[in-house]
Image (cartoon, rainbow, N blue to C red; front, side):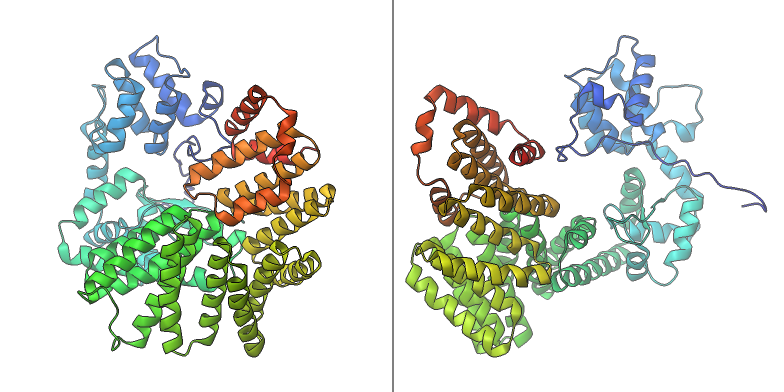
Length: 561
């Protein structure tokens, strides 16, 4: 830069939010306000004057703008193809072959005639050191911090970051309250794809970059898992989950030498996915990682007795996590086998606190089977160890579980006392997941005691927490409890509608209704007599109305008094 020169960075245009965000609908009216869409439509009309944004092509145009990340030149190139292809076909081509986009304008220099030419021209202007840095950092998906750059490339990373910004090949995202206090950097996808192509030409550099990438994000995932998890920390970690999954895949592909790290990473990710309610994904990833590790270490698929203690401990933690997600996805027998194997390893390693956690999990599984006496035995064992070791976390979990047993046995006074003590401990720890679980139990208990207003208060508080956690599966349980409150109040149509909304959300998460959850619904509603107030046609209509609701719409309906 020259002395006195001021730089005004030209950022890509804003793009439509991802389709997974229920707050945004890809309707023509909404899309017209998005700058990248406006540019695409404007340039499309130059190629085909009768082109308009419609309900039929809105989703495709939104996807084109997202895939091209709002880059004006790329949008202009894509828009020119509306003379030949539909927006849906353009979206498919852009998703598969973004580098093949090219312009039909004859007044452009050669270097601006295609995205590939633009990136190649920029690449040729870089020094060899800058090219190596760009290629190495292309292994990172999405954004990354300066700490990640230094860990993956080395101490010169920050200087190279600054130089790539000067070449307009790197974007910087300012820190926000939701995403931590560090700047994040990212390549536009065409630049990253070019870097990956160049990295593939150097096998040694490629191996080093992917290994350092995997090691860095393994440490990041462990830090998240071992720390006190909050809505803020989960939102921050979510920015790097895609990279953690890529690291997990790298460990698995690396073979026996890194398989154990694959189990470790899958275990850490399971903790995050449980927070978000993604039980089916967690179950799949953990199952594949543990099976791969078993196959790699022993033809029998079992860990040898002589295996190092650290290896045994990692496998036990993976099995414990696998048991948890297997239960949430309805694989109860598999969950039982996993927790028994985990507890056997913990016992052999004299890990008393982990044994207590396994006792609690076994008790929970017994509850799912309706074996209350067996569950009580396991919970009491966990409670005894927690008091011996003065561990408040295991104590709070044991109290929650003992309250659940007392609740099902009809001992409401004991249940209320256990829930109250456990809730205080979980609130002190910031454990939002279990706070929601207790508030739901308290709501059901209030309904059984004919206190619907108290139950409604618990529902609203727990729903706010579940939404804050971005956990749709947990939110569905809360919405179902809100439906039970409506049933108890004689609002049959409202109840059916909310049950329909809850069931649709549960179906979308692919985590089935568990036996204890079904029993809780029966306890909360007091049976099905309340349905007699509606005709079959009215029930069907209310169910359809609920199933058509988005999660934000259902949540707003729960809060209506």
